[in-house]
Image (cartoon, rainbow, N blue to C red; front, top):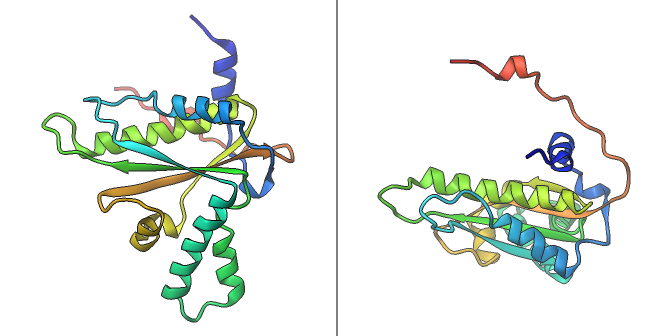
Length: 189
């Protein structure tokens, strides 16, 4: 059964830069929908090797403080302007969802499959937000790989932050970027 609206959504989805997002963000019911869709991904072994951290309201600024403090400590020569940029890392969009990945030892499910499941979860979140009419952008940055930042955000030692998904209302039309031609990326065996 063909779902034309779903196919068109998947064909035209594109990332929206957080700096071009504004309020409102998703309502509580829409956020629940987005997170529910984020949890409906392939998960070999039913291990649920991911979880979500919601940053909204003041939590975005508090997370930015953690990022800025670590940045300032590791870059003592940094200017206050540079530190302030880091402090604003999660404040452009009204909602940011962190996707946390962790692996569990399993005889049939290697860790890379578990990490791919977390990646699928992040992509489902992006797609769900887009389907609801919001702009969404999956970003990383130096701080998602920094253990001090991860500890400050409450991640456990065995957890990774695979990305931060910024979600908000687009303030201008979004332009597409060049996409690869299928002839360049598809082979037949």
